Amino acid sequence: MSISPPPNPDEGFGKPVRPRRRWDPVVKVTHWSIVTAIIANALFTEEGSGAHIWVGYALAAILALRLLWGLIGPAEARFSAFLPSPRRALAHLRDIRVGKKEVHRSHNPLGALMVYAIWSMLGVIIASGIAVAEPPSTAFLDRAERSGDVSPQLVVEQGDHDDDDVPEGAGGEDSVWEEVHETAVNLLYILIALHVAGVAFETRRSGREILLAMLPGRA
Amino acid sequence: MQERRRSLERRAVATTFLVVLQSVAAIFFIADVAGDIAADGWNMHLLVETGATVALLAGVGFGALQLRLLILRARLDETAVAAARGAMSDLVRQRFLDWQLTAAEADVALFALKGFDAAEIAHLRGAAAGTIRAQLARIYAKAGVHSQVGLIALMVEDLVDGDAIKPAEAKPQGNNG
Image (cartoon, rainbow over all chains, first blue to last red; front, side):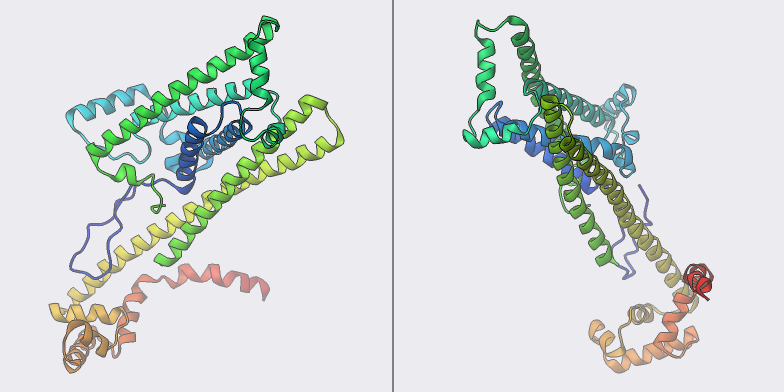
């Protein structure tokens, strides 16, 4: 972060540019798109419905874009700016204990671990979701149209698997993926709660900057 | 300057939404093609569809690169302006000291540098236009210039390196001639 010269109150050259933490529009838009997708699939779409699967694919695309941005984006959005490091995370915990405040250009070391945890969990959720809904096909859109939003054949098929007349092999595999999907989603909720708590804590500790940095209007 | 940076930022945000939309569209096609291949195997139609999908993906990649340039340019613009502003402030303060301007004269000189004329400065400072004109005359005398333009030019002269700007501008013409 560049350090600007101290302000000269006696001169009429406008406000000095203060160093500030900020995220570029790609980080902001992908962050809030993923929030929207998670809320949509958690609360509004029927499990296994066309809409649910479609939102899942969109989430996968946005996550992929954010990961691409981690390679080619501006310095603070790159993986190299917030590599996962338990050692630095512990050092950060010590800083918190002694009340030392350090300005981080990118995620703070604890935040970085959370970012990777959430991304990996999203990866598991997406992979297991695709495994359950296979084969990947846009047919789910037609299905959704035909029978409204309510879970179409897919759910019926899965219901069949649970019945006794299906050999255990195939049905078992599917339900394993379902199990993985549901467990990962529940873990994701825990991670999100921790993430929000972490941001709230850091906001109280070092000011609103961290919160404002992710809101629109400060690109 | 501020306006230009803001327009760069607005363009970056708009491009971001476009790239996000493109990525979502790309994944839709990928899922579609993968599903079709899984169901029916390869055929001509799918080959073309795969090509279109790859092109779309390339579009996402180039869009992202373009976006990065846009964001970096906006930031460079900001730092350049901030650096120039700092340098300009230093220079002006230094010159005002050199010329031994009084506090009131320095105030008036600053307005003059910003392009206000005597009547406007009088209005801004709540003084009589005659007083301001007299102060301006003293400022010009101390700076050794004869007009407001001269005063401004004195500052700009030290900041703009003509040789640094010329080659970039002159070269294409040289090649043509």
